[in-house]
Each structure stands twice: as C-alpha cells, then as structure tokens.
Length: 71
Image (tube, rainbow, N blue to C red; front, side):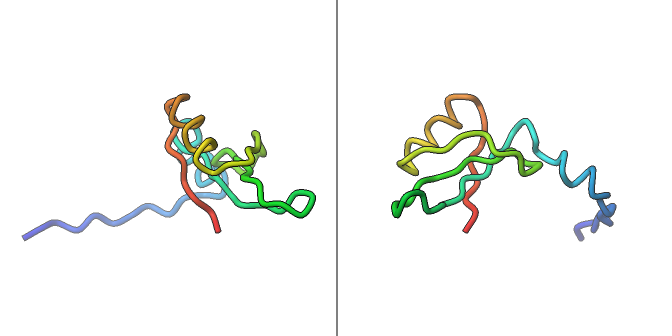
C-alpha cells in the first residue's frame, strides 16, 4: 500500500518562492484592443509580454523555464 505524505502548509513567502526559478506564468491580457501574453515570475512580478502565445512559451523554454498558462 502507498504511504501518504502529509503536506506541510506553505507560508505566504514560501508560496511566492515556490518554483521561482523553474516556472513562469503566461497570462492573456488586452493591450490596445488586441490580445497579448504577459509573463510573470512565480512571485507575480511582471517580466515581459509577447504578441503571440507560442513565442512567449518558446522564449521561456529557451531560458530553461516551464511556462504555465493562467486564465
């Protein structure tokens, strides 16, 4: 039988730091009536934006980061 691990609750600071160097979040935003894709660090810091979602994902992967979609 599989042993269940009890997850330790994360503090707000620990949650903000979770995945900060491995993940970045890609969020669709409206910019001048068009959709763009903003990239944010795990702690919510705005990093950059792209006009194309695929380009945003490719840029993150080129920097060894895993893109995560936010809706």
